[in-house]
Amino acid sequence: MADTPEKSGSSICVVIPAAGSGTRLGESLPKAFVDVDGQTIIERCVASVPRSLGASVVVVVPADMIDRARLLLPDDVVVVAGGAHRSESVRAGVAAAGDVEVILVHDAARPLTPASVFTRVVDAIRSGHDAVVPGLPVVDTLKSVTPGDTPGLERVAATVDREPLRAVQTPQGFTRDALLAAHADDSGLATDDAGLAERAGIDVHVVAGSPRAMKITTPWDLAIVRHLLSSGGGGP
Image 1 (cartoon, rainbow, N blue to C red):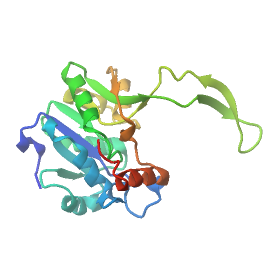
Image 2 (cartoon, rainbow, N blue to C red; image 1 turned 90 degrees about the vertical axis):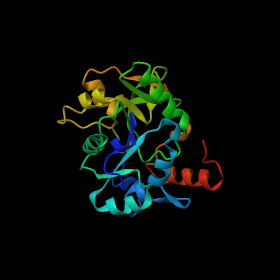
Image 3 (cartoon, helix red, strand yellow; image 1 turned 45 degrees about the vertical axis):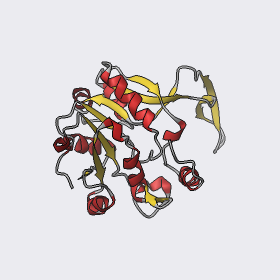
């Protein structure tokens, strides 16, 4: 197992936070270690990082799963312990990333993300943007609601214009300096690193995502991914 990614000479590091328990998935193992068609989610996620990037990879897992992760993953993948919250785990991964130019933060729970999404994010960073995320147009009609008068019912307050909205995915890409600035204030939590960057005053840009970059959160999501893989539909 490599000690740090610096040995590879890569200018890009992919940090994969995989320290969550995944309670909503309803499995007995942490989400990243759940099997999907013969391989764990984390194995498939790491394998999805395109070799053409020449990127090093850091995986962040629960402290008690480090040995297991090292057995599952290639020897050149760095494995470190995560924190109690996602932001803490990302910071642990960034600390292990070494002095690289670009850092991609990628959810372990998106194991089918196509190589083209990684490439679009990196290309946008290299064209001069500090923070870039993939996203998809929102297709559902969205309503904002307030509590209703009857238990179990909510009152529609307004229909939200979906035209300017994007459902954001990963990998989220940053220059190293931008990501460090985004995480400089560790007093608050965020569901993604782009949110921290926005809070730090960093402009975030969006490139096209992919339906295949869906996130495994619920048993239904897991069933969809298993079906795609077992039916031969799990490729790029």
